[in-house]
Length: 219
Image 1: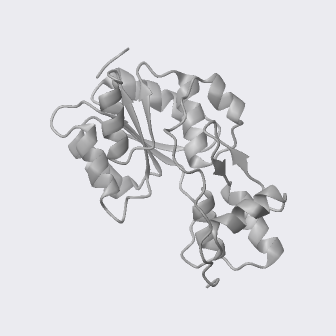
Image 2: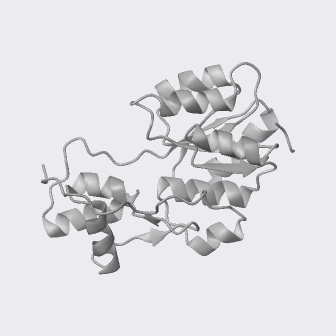
Image 3: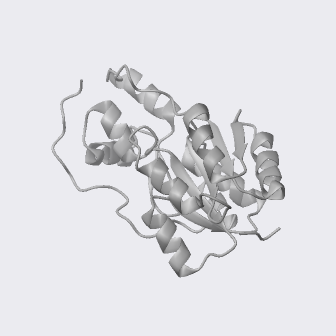
């Protein structure tokens, strides 16, 4: 979970969350890109200890992962790696962009690995639709492509993807990225060792704002 997400739940600013992390009151770790992440279990424990009421609509993030690719071998690799992780992940696959839209609606994933070039609806359009819908805009989208040109990477990031991985993707990369975006404990060193590039430079944490009152290589 990001500092912004934790701030919304606790009814404080993101800077307050950052201060609590720096003071050691709230456990957090950093991604390879230097961003703080907070595990749901740690936030729940912190709120209980401090008496901060969690909103009724606060929900533990799901451990559902959707893989979208038109190559069966790629889908098989991802599914094999993800289901072997000892974290109880639920995994679904879609062979094209149209079926991906149905899966997003029915399966409600927290993380999507998305191929860019597929027959029919490509990954760019799938990502735009996901990020343009209020009901799905918070889903993490990680693009995967065999053509990681600067233009392609910039384009998918502009569509809302959090990262773009180059094919062929290794099992270590798949696991490291999944752990990072689902908030499953993973040291930054492990992410770097997997060869995962951090997302382009964006503000790791927002500036202070007024607190609200608690209430095989393919395409």
